[in-house]
Length: 170
Image 1 (tube, rainbow, N blue to C red):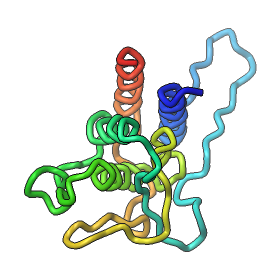
Image 2 (cartoon, rainbow, N blue to C red; image 1 turned 180 degrees about the horizontal axis):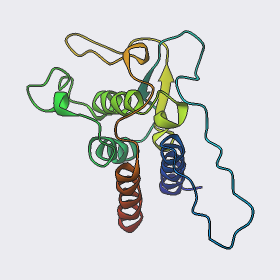
Image 3 (cartoon, rainbow, N blue to C red; image 1 turned 90 degrees about the horizontal axis):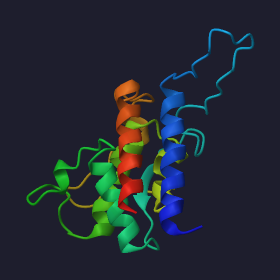
Image 4 (tube, helix red, strand yellow; image 1 turned 180 degrees about the vertical axis):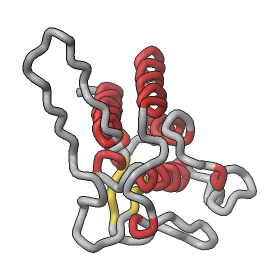
């Protein structure tokens, strides 16, 4: 599978996860007699029990993949990337790897600390060691909420629009 196809596939899975976590249910036609159950993955941090986790960018990921995922996380993904701007606490070092790590972690923490919220087409990885450095503090799973205020129909519309835009770009 090409990298771009892998990213698209991962984003589709992420969209499914977010929709499931938000309680989205399939539409049932009036003539349907059998309800279709919707299974959702477990919420919360499933990486390890009673632990704290962060999401960071994989150093082995290509610069292009990291940049695409960073753009998505800070844009349609809804991560607050203000600290990555010049003068922000996490601007230095000004590298795609450190900026992507910060953005990935914000998105991961906002979306229930699940492994799928740290995929980013294979560019993200869940770690148990605090990646914070200097004045740049990475939010930890222990202090984040298990549910995101962004979940819901509006969020799904954003994810769908992002996937369409990404598909058109490739």
